[in-house]
Every structure is written in C-alpha cells, then in structure tokens.
Figure 1 (cartoon, one colour):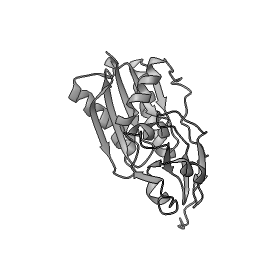
Figure 2: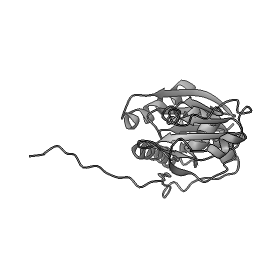
Figure 3: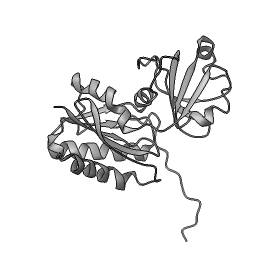
Length: 226
C-alpha cells in the first residue's frame, strides 16, 4: 500500500493531504494569512491521527517545489525534509503549475491550459500546458498585457487557472480566454506525485531547494527605528 503525504504551501492557501493507494483519504486547508509555519505540521499531525497512521507508515512525502511565495515554499520544503529525515522515507516534489493543471478537472474543452501564480502587479509565474498535462513551454515570470498569449487564443479555447487568473481576466479580453481563480491544493498534487513515486524520482533531502524562479528581494522598512 502506497501512502504519500502531500504538502502545498506555495500561495496564500496552506494545505496538506494524505493519499493511500491513489486516493485522497484526508485533507486540511486554511487561508489564514502568514500562518503556514504554524499550520502545516499541525495539519499533518491531525491527519495522521485521524487515519491511525504514523509518518513511518508512509511511502514518501511530496512537497510543492514552486514557483510561488518564497516564505511559503520554505515552510513546505522544511516540513517535508523534517518528516523524511525523521522517518527515513524519500521525498518527492512536483511543480506548482503542474498541480494547477490537474486541479482544472475536465480539460477536454480547451486547446491549452495556462496556470498562473501571482507575482507582483501584472507579473505572473506561468507556462503553457497541453490538456493532457504535458508542459509545452519553460516556466517563466511574465508581464501580462492585452496581447499576452494572443497566438494561442487564436487557435482555440484557453483556460487560465490560478491565483492570478482574476487580475489577468481584466486585460486578456479575447473570447477564447476562460478564467478560473483558485490557489493550488495539496489534493490536486495526487496524480503528478504518484507519477514521480512510480518513476522513483526522489529528491536529495539534504540539498533540495525550492524552485523560486526569481531571487528573493528583502524590503527595507520605512519606519524609523529611533
């Protein structure tokens, strides 16, 4: 029996799930701001108790590798590493954009799926996917304007999905553009996580780092300290 802990903390939604034999058997989520660090481990502990399992009963831990929030990704990866080190089980990672593609549900009506993670202003982290989940372009940070993805939109219906979908819907006005505003969920990591597990694409627990895409930029407070 394959039991996998799934952790998704790349956006404002903090979520975790446990999958057993290819099905989600427990799930927790919260949209409370800036509480990923205090909630992620709690969610996992609660789910393990609910299912009568221990971390050592699991085959692997799978974490969202990004792109997304710098702090959120650090929390998720640190939690996953702690669980794997403590229980001696392997770690897996799947892309945040892949999770959003599988979260889209029935994708047969669309020519392309374009997941979008909110960055700053009109910038998003994105890539183009086929309806079957195959990634067609490299992941990039892209500034969205009225002409974005116009060539793909001329080919047929396109689904833009993610926490940046709503803001992009205000500038991408093509009739073939469809939008689904949502955050990636741990439960939607199931299919790509199972694929990673079956192919034994395990990560180095000691040295694995999230895919930030862009360097973290610390801001300086304008408030006077003295």
